[in-house]
Length: 389
Ligand SMILES: [Ca+2]
Image 1: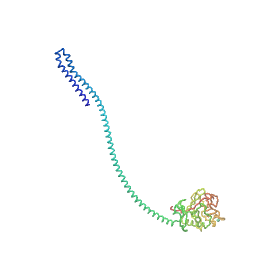
Image 2: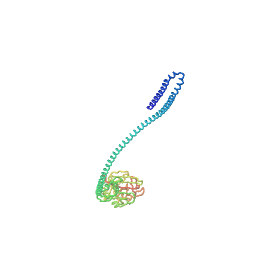
Image 3: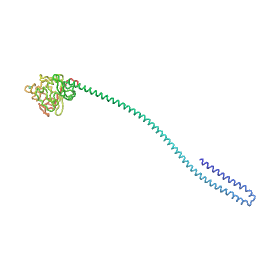
Image 4: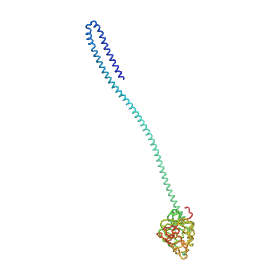
């Protein structure tokens, strides 16, 4: 804008200058006109020549000046246009610069924020590292404490093991001293030594699984490996093998059932592997002088039937010692067994072993369940009626 005003001022100065030149020319003409009026004939030609010679250069000069001025004006106009363009470009540049500055400011702010963030992160990292170091120290301390405890625990375990070993030995000694039956051996199904009052030491098979703990097995049949058609002596002393089939012996039974109230548990299994049992809660037999009489059975319970009840108070009979109620014959011989008989028997667990379910009075049978049909396996067990287990 200053440039435009400056250009406009120059134009006015030039116009005034031209006007002054024209005025001087006019004054000069007027000053010479008096001599023309003094001589009217030659005044017109003289004036024309004078004016022409005087004004012509001035006019030419004025015209030339005017053209120059017009050219200047055109040039100035071009410059103005260029100036406007430059101004527009300047404005645009200034706007760009402003935007750039704003972006730069934002960028600087971002840089500052990033620096703060990094500083904060570094501080936090340092804090975390301190915390990790602290935890690590605690872990190390705990590990050391754990090692100490582990050592102490190993020592304690060793001591406890020693105590357990000693206690076990003492327990076994006590059991060996006190075992009069399988009760101390609880759930065992193994062979143990017991000491029967009035009889002495004897090995017996225990069954702590079939009907609960502590039962002493007195008879077992399951494979026909042992002949049960035996004489009186053999039934008195017992026969067979504790690892297979056997009869424990009437003399042992007498002394055991005499020393304490005993229960009797009889398990029966047929050839379809169906299992039933008969339980008597007061089992007692007499002495040899009483022919090992079945003196007591107590109350029956079970699902095989109360077959043995029929022979309560009957004596034991073998083929060589007939104590039954059949005057004209021997039930043991008839039934191929050794058992408690009267006129006949209602059970025959010491009969001949058959390998299928034959209907035979000489076989192993329990009349109240399957009549005279042979059973696959049987087992007789006794246990004190009053026991803590
Ligand atoms: Ca007889």
